[in-house]
Amino acid sequence: MTQNALMIEMTDVMARFISMAGKRLPDDVLQKLAEMRDEEDQEMAKEIYRSMFENLEKAIELDRPICQDTGVINFFVKVGSNYPYQLQLKKILEDAVKKATLDAPLRPNAVSIFDEENTGDNTGERTPFLHWDIADDSDEVEIHLYMTGGGSSMPGRATTLMPSAGYEGVAEFVYDAMVEKGINACPPLIVGVGIAGSMENAALLSKKAILRPIGSQNQNPKAAEMEKAMEAGINRIGFGPQGISGKTSVMGVHLETAARHPATIATAVSVGCWVHRKGTIRFKKDGSYEILSHKGVSL
Image 1: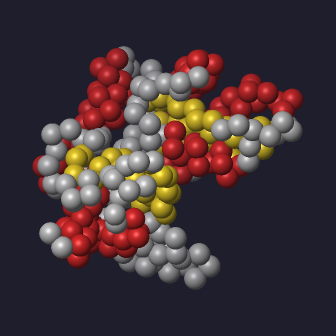
Image 2: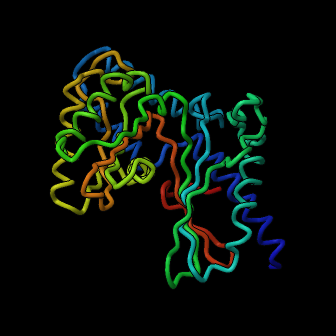
């Protein structure tokens, strides 16, 4: 296959992958929602879960997005240092978004700042947003897709705390964000918390946190303990599925960290709604691929 043919094929695969991710929840999210549904003991909450799963089935049956808000598209790209098509990836992903917008279809959500014009194809200034990591001694590329809905962005917060606030201050900041806007984000939620040396680093880590597999734990035992404690605390708020009250409110709380400055504790919160549309796909240098997030799904 020539390079040009491979680029065309990869663009088409990514367009179909984006379309699929807007219509099917990943395996970990689907499993967790099913567990929460089965554990729920409040009648209204159980009815909400029944409606959610009916919606999921209809999305597949009718080949339509799960939610009308198909979000703003983000890619977290882990590209191998030996992957031969690094320079082509940005255009491939932009073209794939344009194609998926028409084919899926996806609601156009890219609005230009100040000019307030919708581009109509979900691309625009720095959109889709691309985050890059390098994998040493690899000739593959792993692409993490995330579709950020407007509601799930509502509780997003970042701040820099004085060190005297301690990690208790981090937890208080997270709880305040959930109490203020969590109900607007279409719960049950996945909550990502970043702690770092500056707000921008904390914000990025909080977004990466919600892309972790649900049920995973931070490798630091103290961080893992804090994840469990914050999950229990937010569940005690009790807003439940779609905010009508229920036994649980979150699918999980994930914490990601980077070394901080001695004089500050920067922290941020990112949230995913119950329609947590993420996906992971890995390409080899010959163009072959594997879908990691949706087992058994073909494009």
